[in-house]
Image (tube, rainbow, N blue to C red):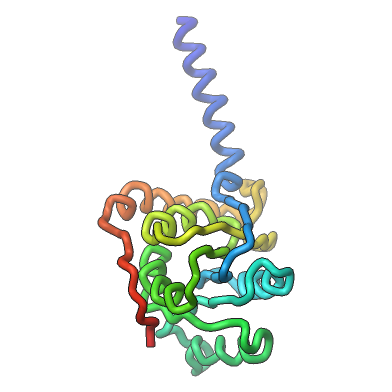
Length: 203
């Protein structure tokens, strides 16, 4: 009887711990100086990009690569064209665009490799949203082991917070990211996913 009670208490405590730390576990913040900064595509706004610009200005890397979905469109214009205009206005000569063919982080790694090779980079500081850092770290290190990656977790308190159960938007983002993270752990991780080095950058 007492053994069952003890096991039940341990399970309850463990459940509470996991519940409270479900969001904070997703965050990896280990920025290092690098050959180039890569701003991953996605997110709810352009916060990732402006965080990357700030890090260039602070001397973390001499330049920046912005990942953009090649087929994306907004208000009748291609995302790539809008991104080029933004880069020309804000970081002329210090940044470039890496066009993506797919909209998943797993596929993004495949599109990113030739852009990194063209830049001659060996170390990369990746900028992405806080909730996206752990999954993107595991995917990029798994698929592109030839590069050294560090990560900057860009905070956006409107969309994500570690006390995720107190805000509906935070809860949606946390649960959605955990779904993607578990898919990575259970499915994509076991695919033959190492990206072969390719010196030719995408068109």
